[in-house]
Each structure stands twice: as C-alpha cells, then as structure tokens.
Length: 277
Image (cartoon, rainbow, N blue to C red; front, side, top):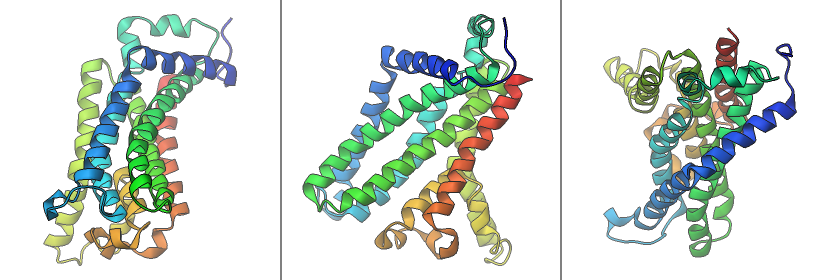
C-alpha cells in the first residue's frame, strides 16, 4: 500500500544504489573520470607552455588554469548526467512502475540525486585527484592542502549543477526539451552571465551596480566556485580581475561554502515540490 509523502532513508539508499550501479555498468563513471583526468593532467603539465616551459612549475598557475577548465567542464558533465533523470523515466514508461512501489516521490527523487551525486563525486575527485598526485610528487606536500580545497569546491560545483539538472528534468515535458533547457542553463550561467555583469560595469563606467556587483556574483554557482579558489591563494588573486571588485568580507570560505550549499539545496527543493505536484 502506498505510504504518505514521508521520507524513509532505506528507500533512498535502495534507489541510490541502483542509480550508482547503473552508471558503473554503462561505464559513465569511468568515462567522466577519464575526461577529468586527461584535461587536468594536460593543464598541470603543459599549463606553462605559453611561457616556453613544460612540467609542473607552480601551484598557483596550475590551480588558476584548472579553475577555468572546471568552470566549463564540471557543470556540463553534471547537466548531462541528470537532465533526463525524471523525464527519461517518464518517456521510457518506467516512472509509473517505480511510483507503484511502496516509496514516495520524495524518496525516489532523493534516491536518484544521491546515486547520481555519488557517481559525479567519484568521477570528479578521482579525475582531478590524478593531477593532485602529480603535483604532490613534483612540488611540496603543502600544495595538497590547497589542491584538496580546489577538488572539494569542484565537487560542490558539480552537485549544484546536478540539482539544477534534476529541477530541469522535473519541469520538462520530454527529453528533447530537457536537453535544450540544460544547454541553455549551461550557456547562460557559464558564458553569458559574467559577460552581462561586466558589460554593465563597463558601459556605466563602474557607477551603476558597483555596490551590488559582488552580491550578483553570488547568484551564479560558477562565480562562487571561482571566488572560492581565487581567494585561497594570494598569487591566484592577481590573475583575475574580479578580485579587485569583490570585498574580502564576502570571500570567507565558510560564507561561500554556505552559498554553494544553498545552490545545491534550493533547486533540489524546487524539483521535489514540482515532482510531488
């Protein structure tokens, strides 16, 4: 008999295990890990090639380059992973079968999110961790602390976009519209949003919106991720112009981590509300 809309952790774990095992079986985790590892190793080793040298030379340069890579790659992988999590089940006709079982819609959605999060976290941590091994063997072991912070922030960025992907999947009518919406989200948050903000500052001579500019950056998870890593190392801050317009009082890791957590929870809560409707 169908239960109310409570939450049973055991049901969530069952769905999560199925989602994670499905990603292992179709080699999605392996493919995503290989992509992260290949790009991170290439950047770590050849990141200073424009200066006529190769090899691991500087943690600051490596992290600055990897941040730029992660901003493009991690959200894209997360959106691809989760955009059809719900609407795909509906199109295949398996959603009604799942909902006929003794579990609630909230449990189903959370189970899918936990399983997909585990797959994405493993891929991100292992993929970027390979470059961390290279850094640790070539530079001081102290760099692993800062590099670990970068990997953790990349995981949080992926989880935020995975939440957005599930939200898109619950609102979309079919997989085609879900994929189109996912591409639009990636294009806007990764490419367009910062251009609009910087364009507004340039056109206004820095007068219009200068006071609210730092807060507008917090409305984009990619900017939160960038700021987390910019303010972690002093030398990295000099490589980004945004550091000159973002106050130190808003750059505290705990505050930025809380903002990123909000980016994870808010879309997921909206997805749960929509799915229950």
